[in-house]
Image (cartoon, rainbow, N blue to C red; front, side, top):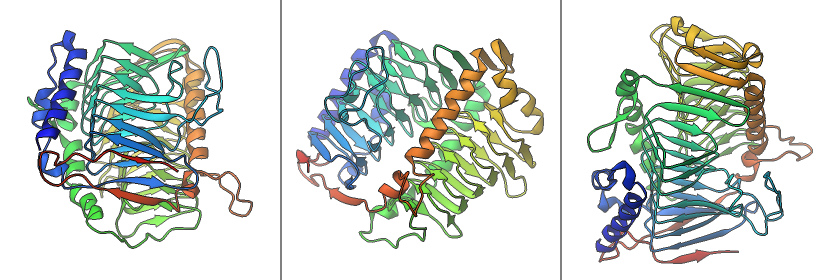
Length: 472
């Protein structure tokens, strides 16, 4: 496997060069993470539908166990058990909202060069006006269950369960379990557990306490993830690997207007309503998915009911809970009710990204509230929730517990509401079966075909995929 090792050495060298000012050596992470035998064991797969532009080119890369959809170009990279989902890339002729809006001259494509993505989710489209036709990830290492959501990046390191959302990063480090959506960062190091949402109209910021991170998600001396959230996800790894061991799999019972990905784990006693999208690597067990709901990549919905029109963003985990209609559960949130201590979240709530709720007694969050941070009992609600109506009235600065907010509360609420509506529309939650109007991913992904691609199994190229180009 000499060439795979040389490939990883090139990647780490380039990323280290970008992060030199931080004295941060990514080799420690890579050397203690990569199991070389597995790089030659798993195939990768490319999805083809009649609704998405087809183009996939890879060269001198390793892509074991990874999923690709839409237009993608991978060069000199290692992508292990990751999801590169380009079903929302901009199309030729689309106009990007920017200072000088111009129509795209070509379909947008995801460009991954000189990078290591380890169990990482890449989705949405780039918001970089400098390269509107390219969603670029260059000289970057992203570790376990990180999310790169519409965020172009060069020379970065993302810690486990970190999220870069709708922004541009240059030579930055995101700590474990941090969530950043704040425009553009150059040469910044973000501490673990920082939740930061900012634009011209508002700024929302929260910092998880060290004691919380130590318990739920952190890294050891070798930059490997540890903690309750990682253990929860890792113990279910075998269920996903079984999906790769068989060619044919019994389809999951679902209405004609809903889509359940062939690479999702669906356990018994799960009910799926109309216009529901279940993405690859979602995990459902004893789950009731109300009409228009979705379970995106790396989500877990266990012993829970989603009333309908619910958005569960990438990596969201809902256990022993009832979630009211049109409630948003943000990236990598961990909502951990118990069998005798169930969690109830009312309708119209917004659960901020990277929220942790871990309770030992029943807990109810009232309708139409914003929820953030760490909640372990009813006493925490006073400093980790606010009624959306009250939030809309804020104009200025306010601090609630460890959360600070400044700017327009109304603009903050409208931004989330617009995004939730976009997700519901894109996922086909409003699809009308009789008129066949308002279709989205739940309908368009039903007839997806998967091309399986294999690496060299032996020799100096073991784990490397031959250079292949797939196009219409």
